[in-house]
Length: 315
Image 1 (spheres, rainbow, N blue to C red):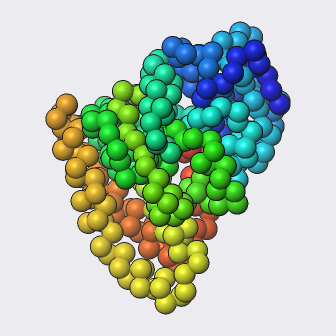
Image 2 (cartoon, helix red, strand yellow; image 1 turned 120 degrees about the vertical axis):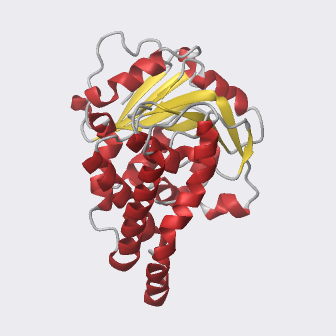
């Protein structure tokens, strides 16, 4: 269902999952403030279009607004459906709680003039007052901080990166798997010589959970869905080997986050307790990952959907 002005040709399509308009209102306002707003398409996936009623005039400046009715679970299928519905040559896998700076779209489009299959924006902590917020942010986005210089990278983040639409469509049936939580990078890109770029000037402010109970639950469920998705085609023996090896995961996760902590500290003093929170988050992630190898994902994705949609409630 197209609700926007079709006179402008989209140069970039932002995809976001939502349950109603209130969940994405802040994101829509940031898109409306883009320097090249007439080149931006918004693609909204929701269970029912009647729950996403845009106030008059709010989206008039956008090139196009497309509302796709589709179940939000599984999330990979919902995002894949949105990719196919998008019309821009560049697609951003957006989130309800990640807000782009005014020149974000312009910077991404300029970066895609290079040979890159995907471009990572410079990620910033949108609620930097809390050690819990910093721990989750650094664990999830530490490799793509805005403080890091622009240049070629090994791979982009799972969310908030921009992709050439042709590259995603080319995955065909594998697209849904890659866009699912814990899906990871499609091996076709890794072995096919695809190159990726970090564009630090395309800034995105990402909100992170800062309430203890929700923070602990998100760390656990995220680890579990990653473990379960990683081993979905493994033998029982291999699952048991990785379950036993999970005792090393907290150390691995902490070491992986250390470089991000160093980069962040060059610009600011992190809240007291950030290192302890990273250590605790690594333990919770490892516990979830271990159970994912042994018992599968259970309700992981359904639990993660609450935080994907409504993370702002827990900041």
